[in-house]
Image (cartoon, rainbow, N blue to C red; front, side, top):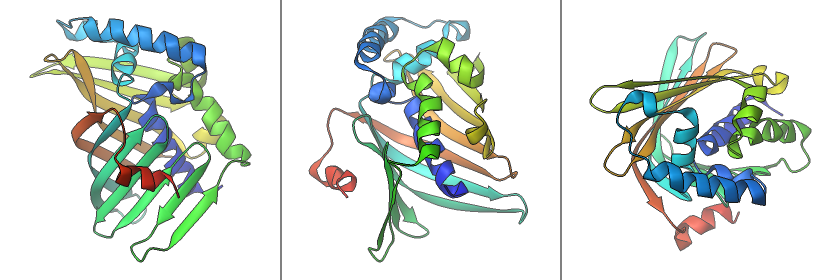
Length: 241
């Protein structure tokens, strides 16, 4: 599997980490997570010390579908250059993730558990079928510990560093360092950050940062997040290809 595709997979999976985590869990885990999520949502956070990694995962996993805007900053270490792109995104527990880049060039990338579909501005579609790809399977298996919300399995596959600090709001940062050799050969760390929203006692995911072994890096900043119960007909078409 090409390095760029591994990075795309990791980005997709990292979105699921703190998004709809039940997508890849078994039925029993899903039921447990849902029950724990309700308990987490009802808890009133008074100080940064009350925010835990488990609380953040449970809070964000309660959203089946998340849509919003993104700005991507891609840094190339050797060239000492940065590139910016922007667009909209969809994170859907049942179907996958769609990145609809609008600037500077239009393109759509859809990632599911078994494939990556890229649509260029001229309408050209390319599909990478990963259903029989062992590398893809290895990555999915490694990160499935996050989807199930099992902290003991998570620490088995990642070194996890969690911090929360108070300011105008309570902000959290999660740094995941992969232990799996396949993942670690491409990505050094995956960092996720967001804040606790006291109004509705839940957490937001505001950015994801991937630091590559090469020294390159990708940062996605998320804004205008909305939480929906189902996809529109137009959104469904993105995942139908």
